[in-house]
Amino acid sequence: MLRVAESSYKIYNMTQGKLLEVDVGVGGITTSFRPRALGDDLHSESMIVNMGPAHPATHGTIRVVVELSGEKIIDADVDVGYLHRGFEKMCETVDYNQVMPYTDRLNYVSPLINNFGWCLTIEKLLGIEAPKRAQYIRVILSEISRVSDHLTCLGASAMELGAFTVMLYMMEARESLWALIEEVTGARLTVSYGRVGGVKDDLTEGFAGRMQDAFKKVREHLANSDRLLTRNRIFIDRMCDIGILTAEEAIGLSLTGPMLRGSGVNYDVRKAFPYSSYEEFDFEVPLGTKGDNYDRFLVRLNEMEQSLRICEQAIARLPQGAIIVDDPHIALVSKDQVYNSIDGMINHFELVMYGVKPPKGSAYQAVEGGNGELGFYVVSDGSGKPYRAHVGAPSFIHMGSLRKMLLGRNLSDLIPTFGMINMIGGECDR
Amino acid sequence: MERERRSIEDLKQILTATCAEIIEESVLELGDLILTVKASNLTELLRLCRDSKELSFNLLVDITAVDWLDSREVRFEVVYQLLSLANLWRLTIKVALSEDSPEIATATTLWAGANFLEREVWDMFGIRFTGHPDLRRILMYDEFIGHPLRKDYPVQGKQPRIALRMPEVENTARRMQRPELVSIRTSKVSAPKSQSAEGSRE
Image (cartoon, rainbow over the protein chains, first blue to last red):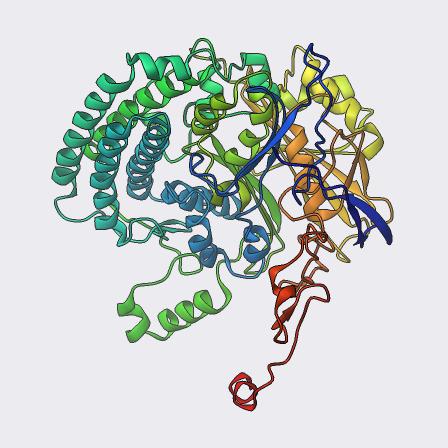
């Protein structure tokens, strides 16, 4: 058992201009917790256990300090921020298209959704819309990313509950999807594929065929994983009736995405505020009934099939045409023009040196990310760089609900509950 | 489940009918309704937006802030994003806060989800949320000096190394006979003794 470090030391606090006593807490860990006397028959004391930031059973750099009475969690302190890189501060120093590689590193399992979310926000500020073909390509790649995001979430969570085979099936399925993404974007994770006003490249020759092959494999793996998990006694025991949030609680905690839909609230940004022509596709929004971890699992499992359906519809109806807007102030002109005409060269130079310049104003644009509503709030001061860029990251908001879901549960319930939040460190800590 | 989609104009009408005296300004920008209110009226407006049957902005999507430094008279701006699940409306609420007293009432009394969001704004901008149950830093560590997203915080700002979290624990390096390479207590890197090492550092 960890003993309390009976010390507190002084830290200079800039904002108040005076010395502030800061509690060092347990084992040198800053926390407000102190073991307390429990009013039970044994006259025992609670125990404080520190999990993380590098715990083998939590995929993500996160620390949870739990106060235990036996195995029951009586209090929890969720500590995020170990992967903070200053995304928002960095965005203020580069131009709008240069932010793209930074957005890749938010939710790095589905970087394309972040790319397109950023693009859509800037397009909203500019008052433009990407060409139809680019919108369809965005839809296809976003949905492939969403499937890979859900596969990662469910695979890793299943592994933490002992189902290693499922993890391997799902990683193999994800691999075939990432092969598709690599084929189009040239990279597996750090894709930087979105561009303000469209996308970087067109789909490759024969993409539709390879996508069908990959989807066949994914469906096979999903069916196998479904057989291994959904009616598995051990899995059900660990997932059912754990981490329950009612619809009202989920809304009050600002949850979105599979977490909110697991509680039975029908809110999907793709349906509620369609962007990138999502209104043209036929898909369903799976909803949970109880709001426990098992519901969140089922929502994700069913969403994957819906995402595959969207991809198939989009590829069948893929319109012809440009993949980026034809505006030299927003998109790079063709190399042919750059080398052979003076205005082409000037346009290229201006765009590379000064970037896209949206008019003054602010815009909030949300997309349905893998984990929930991914919102970008961008303030433009009319220059080539964002004055302020903010990401409303679902992982971060969902981590705020972890404490509520854990209180009164066993320590072992922390693992599936945390797994179903699917916290992605890059997105949570920014 | 198909919900009736009501236009943003309807929202503007309802808002001007119900709480015109609180709202300082309401503008439609890029298809979104943006309200500006005084800090003292914020809680009242948020409560009204959440509880009114007609509005029912039940989901608090996001809280963030903008630092205008010298380009505006009032330095800070706190931005709330609300969402009405019943009517599918989005609403942005902006509150200006002066540099001298960057304080605003907390929204945690209305939405539990505001807890983490407000802690982030406090951490990044140093805006205090009065009545917040647990206003600690969240992304930065406790010893961090300043608030990184303020415009006067340098992009490549360096922070001092922090002291050991458990000073009473004896460091194994203290038992060494040779001079120590890094002094832990003073947080200073002592200069290497040998000449060659000095040269390679230059």
